[in-house]
Length: 64
Image (cartoon, rainbow, N blue to C red; front, top):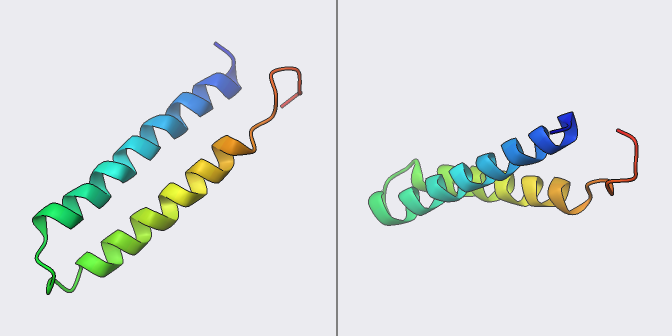
């Protein structure tokens, strides 16, 4: 496995964790919990950032 492939796997794992955090906040924190909006916003921004990186990844013929 190349270094790039390892990074891609780690990004996929991180994406899954961020999605779990967002789901946790949505299902376990009350709507009036002051931390809920912050957690949801940060996890949403992280998810969008990770997806952006994964979508713009180099092709397998590109050099890292």
